[in-house]
Image: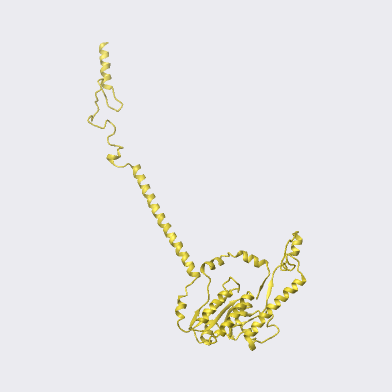
Length: 362
């Protein structure tokens, strides 16, 4: 029995193993190989970043951080680039809408033909307003080296008031500067109020296909009374005078008011006729239809005395004025106002004009 117990205790001493894969005797002594390892059986320096360098995870985090910083730098550079590009675009737009006249100023130091544009609808607040055209005319006449003044006309007409203001100013400047003649050259169209202005020139020229004439006055509008009756709409308008609302498109037409407005149109028409006769004199062939509002081509207008010859701005400057050098004295609206107008900010005025009767030479 004792022998068996001794054998069992010896076998337990030999076969006893610790949790780290070594064997210990019953006195706790370690019998693993490499017992001199000071790591305590924990795998040496494995997992210690201070001794073996950063792990793969740390390297990945570092790369991601660097890439993020690089992306931020690129984003800032692109932001600066787009801001500069936008600034350059805005500067370009302003320069395009308000071109420099430095070249014209340099040319004005020698003899030249001064040109002023009458372009677009003649109306206050527009590019072809009386203030704009008159400003250019005064500069053209006052220029020391301008040999003559040319009106480059391309307009369907417009306000009789604005047209008459330009006409009268041309007449005044001609008296003040008798040595400088005024020539009107019609390009595409010189009708109604535009022809009113052209009639103040000493001579008028046009292209064979130009539209010339339309010596008449018109006021247009709409009447909605029957439509209102059909849809059951009641019109309510208040005025302090019985004729104050006579142009109201939602009220019935009054015969007396209609006759009065017709006499007003006739009076303005007579003013137009008188201005044309004063400007054209005996050159005008007065036929029954000459003041009826009809239009003619440049070729047809010549024998009627509406124009003096066929020509373009360039040929008139070269062959008639004998001064081929042309300097533009036209006044231009400022770039911002021009941009605003082109974007259609004046919608309210357009709507008002569409629904209200307005007097125009057209």
